[in-house]
Length: 562
Image 1 (tube, rainbow, N blue to C red):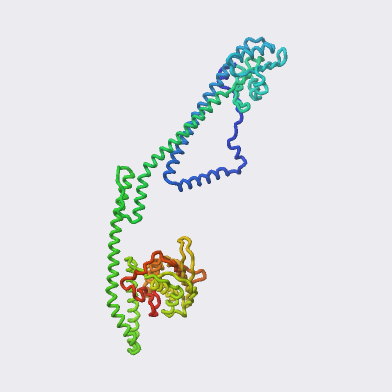
Image 2: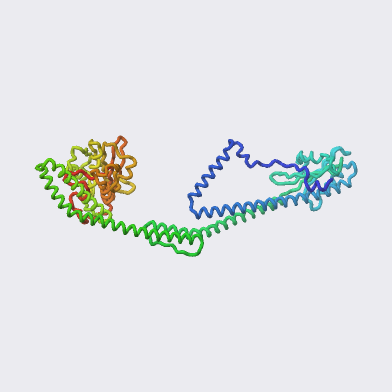
């Protein structure tokens, strides 16, 4: 028998291993790859939705887990191979030596009793394996000796191992070799080996238990698993500490940016150190300082502009009053004037009124910008207010009113008249000469927890171009640049919107599905804050309110050109 062959386990029979993917063999081709790719996308989406701290901790933990599992796996398999190799080599060496010594003392055709004595000697002492000896064609026929039939019998030896043991090798010095194979019996690992010492001599098989080695490896696996868990926990704690160190300046930067966004332009960050975060703090402080300077400059310019508009409006109001008085006299005498002069007088009268309306509008805008516009609240019947607004401007024949006479709200009547005059006048001008429909209804705003009054003004015109819709409430905006001298000044709808905001309401513009534009005024029945004693300053008691809508003068409301 060749000892080298015994050490190397030449001809080892490998048992089939469990297929780790066997449970998925029934899936269609490509299904597993698609599932993994979709799961990866979901994981990446979830990571993007989580906080930076959690992502940092997760990455640290995953890196530690991969490293710990890799190291533990390598250590386990190295130790497993070393333990099993040492155990099986020890058992095979003892078995080979005992089998050789026993077979050397046997006659050419040993009796069964001699084989039994040989088996007893081989398993005596401190040996941990059982033996089966087989002699074919002896004096007593086939002889099979089983030292422990209850645990190891000849039929338990794999057929592949029996064939390998009896296969004669012609290309080596020793015609027979020692072969071995690891098997499981009742869930426990065992080592089965076999050899034939001489040609025609008895064949021996051993069964050595590997249960102690398995228990040792299980203990090692538990130890490595605990070490891996501790490494992951430690890495998570380390990542938490690192995240706290890194994210604390980021949190300070976020808070500072939030305060800066709230208008606290004096906000600055403390500059410490010379790392990237310190450089970021210095950059933020420089940007905040530059922003503060620019905002202060813009505020100064805006204040100067407001003062200029207010002063200009006030300065123009006195001469405009005198000019308006003169034009009123001229208008009364227009019928007695020379027919060649009358058209010029009428042009002067209309342009003077337009200029007067523009001055009043500018004064009203100045009040809104300065925050001095006040409201005089009263309980207003919406239908009566609409009727008064339409009747005062001689629009009764052109407006169709659909309003419940019982709807009331606490509003500023003058400012509501300004809003309605602008919306209805705008609809009449751009409605193609057809009637305008005005409807009033009540709605509950669950989001704000209040009851609203909704007024819709719909015309039957061509509607508002889509590119104009976002700008209809902008000051001085006119959709047609080729009509810079249109009747409107471009302030009417802007003033109407500011008056709606003063009540805590809103105005929206849209195109109706059937054609035409629809302006929707939404006002709370009870304003957010009341101050019945507040009054407008600087011309706030004028009947037309500087809104361009006029009161009883019959002039159409100021509107935005489309």
